[in-house]
Amino acid sequence: MDGPSGSGKSSVSRGVARALGLRYLDTGAMYRAMTWWMLGQGVDLADPAAVAARCGEPVLVSGTDPDGPAIHVDGVDVAGPIRESDVTGSVSAVAAVPEVRVRLVALQREIIGAGDIVVEGRDIGTVVWPEAAVKIYLTASPEARARRRSAEVAGTTAQAHQEAMARRDKLDSTRKTDPLSMAAGAVELDTTPLTLEEVIGEVLRLVKE
Ligand code: ADP
Ligand code: CDP
Image (cartoon, rainbow, N blue to C red; front, side, top):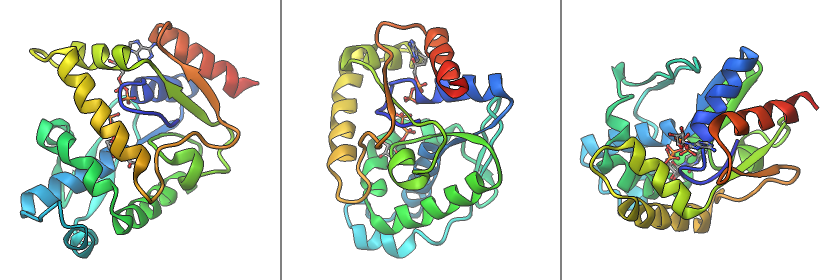
């Protein structure tokens, strides 16, 4: 399941994994965890060589339970801190560094190779697992995506989210290594006019086809 921020990847993937009794992997959480660690180490994120030089150091462990996706860095539970705005604002710069992607894609392939799973991110169908049985590309209008995020985060406006998302979309879809794009053979699903339950139902239908 690939797509931009707020298109519904996490909610839909978790719902589909629950319905089918499958594992679930949030690859964005891995890029966020790497970013959280870099910020804590004081690495200059504007310097890709510095990020590349350090990205092999943290030990990242990702859980695969759709009911409580866990993520640990060097034994520390970072599920909360990786959602903070400092990480959100820096993650695309870290994710653009090819050495970071090589390391995280290898970890992702190891987890995926252990058995059936629903995986969400930006490059799952294009790079991480192009042989996936079902590939979905979720979209939604910029307004709907921003509205959804502002509903999740108390005290924030849709306008501010829309600007931050547009900036991240641009960085994610124009980076040289594995940019966000729709995979060959993927089904595009525009979630704007649908409820979460309708989207999950549509994905389950595609899986069973
Ligand atoms: P992403 O992982 O793509 O960033 P999330 O699943 O984290 O997206 O966020 C989507 C938010 O929008 C959730 O709070 C979800 O409940 C809400 N939402 C509302 N309508 C829909 C829909 N039709 N499809 C998916 N999510 C929806
Ligand atoms: O939660 P949200 O959809 O906003 O983002 P996320 O899925 O947590 O991903 C955070 C960031 O990680 C993205 O903006 C990308 O820069 C990067 N990412 C990536 O490059 N490749 C992936 N497979 C997943 C995320």
